Image 1 (cartoon, rainbow, N blue to C red):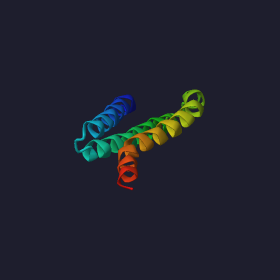
Image 2 (cartoon, rainbow, N blue to C red; image 1 turned 30 degrees about the vertical axis):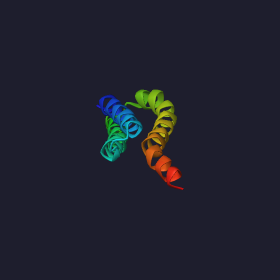
Image 3 (tube, helix red, strand yellow; image 1 turned 45 degrees about the horizontal axis):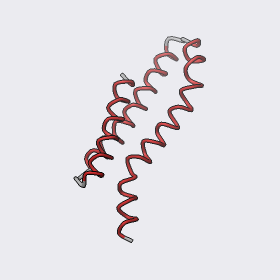
Image 4 (tube, rainbow, N blue to C red; image 1 turned 135 degrees about the vertical axis):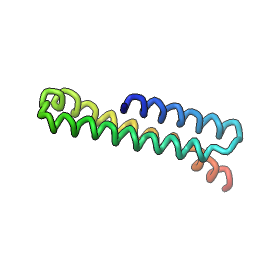
Length: 94
């Protein structure tokens, strides 16, 4: 599930950037991108929670250390890319 939500978040982010570049209203796409980023993180947390419940320590040891860094980086990139149009508009107004 987190993979599907992640791809939707990426698609919404690119839609956001495209709409900004085309001069259209991009704010709904921005909100969608950020929302699906949050849903992706929640789905990943649920997956890890299930592994803890069934005591699948091998899965936790294999996946969690690598995914932690990836989730931090990808979440930061999502926030930066989705808010970039707002920051660029503020820069252009000055």
